[in-house]
Structure formats: C-alpha cells, structure tokens
Length: 325
Image (cartoon, rainbow, N blue to C red; front, side, top):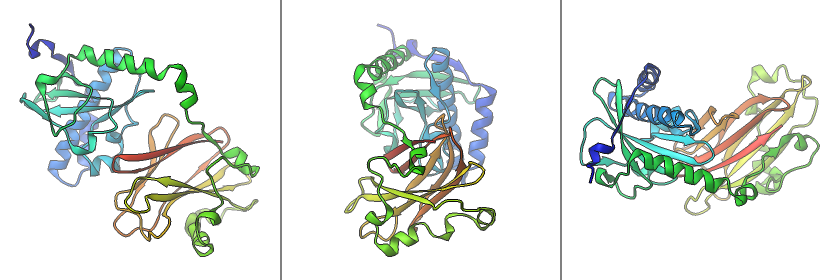
C-alpha cells in the first residue's frame, strides 16, 4: 500500500499569486491577520491554477476569499467552481497530522483541499482532498488523493447538468418590465411591508448623493419595490431588500439598493453584508453593517443589457437575487 506521501502533488506558485497575496495582506489591520490572508490567498491561487490546468472551470474572484470585507472578518479560503459550488483550500506551512478547519467554513462547501506551502512561497503541494470536514481538525490520514478531487468535481458537474437542474435554475428579475409596472412574484410595494412613515424613510433624499441629484432631470417617478429576505435570525429573521429605479433621459438608470430591518427590529444585526456582483460573479460594490446600523445602502447606474446580482449574507446564510435589464 502506498503511503500518504506518495499521493502528494507538487505545483509551482506563480509570481502573480505571490503579488496578489502580498497586496491582500497589506490591507489587513494586523500582521497576524495579514499572514492568514496571505496563506489563504496562495492556497486558493494554486488550487485554481491546478483545476484550470485540468480543464475544470473556476471563477477565482467570485469567492469570499476575494471579497475584501469578508476576508477581513473571517478566515476563508474558498474557490468558486463554476456551476458546482465553493471548494475550501486550507493552507499549511508545516506538515502536521491535522489541518485546522475554521468554524465559518464547515458548511456551504463542496469539499476541502489541504495545501502545503513552501517557506519561499514558490512552491505548493496538494496534500489531498476530503469531501467534508465536520470538526475543527481534519486528519491528513483521511485525505484522498488529488485525483479523487477531480472525480468528485466531475460527478458534481454531471449531477448539476441533469434534467432537474434546468427547472431548479432561478430566473433573473427583469427590471425592464418594472419600468412598464410589471413586477415579479415576491416583490411588493414598499407600503405593504412597512408603515407609511417607514416607507417614506425607506428611500429618503439620501438615496442619491447631492452631486448626482443636481444633474437628474427626473423624467419619471421612481419605481420602488421590496422583497422580504429570511436570513434565519432569532425572532423575526427577515430583513427587507429594497430596490429603487430612477430612469434618466440618457437611457441610464440610477439604481439604489437598501437592506433594512422589518417587523419589530430597529437595527440590522452586526456584520450583515450587502453586495453587488457583476456578470462574472465578482463583487464590485459592498457594504457591511455595524452594531447600530438601521440600514445598508449601495447605488450605481445601469443601462439596457446589464446583468448583475445582489447578495445579502449573514454568517453562513446568504440569499442572492439575479437581475437583468
């Protein structure tokens, strides 16, 4: 029988990966956090390079590990495998009997890859793969060979591509129809979710900056809708995702997004995240709540043909809504 060392797979760490990891590390508030982010980034980068080499499509920038807010607040090293889910890539600097698995990454993962990084950060070794990690320490003796990771991903791709997946695929919200006052199921008038006083505050004059407001000719009345989002919080576990559209004379549309508490809640829970993702799944706008915030807000401009997604996340729970003009 071959030993576990016989299954190790050495791979080079690219200069681009080292540069990105250094950049991400410099953004952190402490040296300890910076080192954690550096190692996580290198581990994700080398697994991404390996999967791309093996013909498995990935989106390097779509994971939480590439989100500056999430990587600041959590110990994450996830890689998005397109159409399948998130793979966790855990780094080690020394070959030890176990690999630590942070609590925040023990769910919503399709598997775990353990990566040994060299001291020079010029080489990495894939130590193996596990489809699950239920405890805080993953024994290396439980790891399967890197080839098992490929088989696991191919199996997941096959199951996702099955006939049921088409029916389960979520349809994007068509905002062009909103301009004709045709709204998708689940999107309510603001007044139905909030009291009249709250609804008038839900989209205040703060929705757009003064510099923007000065050049708006406001050719149409703003279109406002809200959807209740259940994040599993104690008590009333819902918040409201508000969307306001303001069509402009130049065919651009000002879009204001807000997340506000509903029911008896006065404040959002701390560390709730509101993110806007582009067509590739990369985050291009984000905000995170503090201990006494009663709303989060993001604003940008779109035009016909644009596609984007809005993600609301709290801890391990997240809801994503897809939009198209």
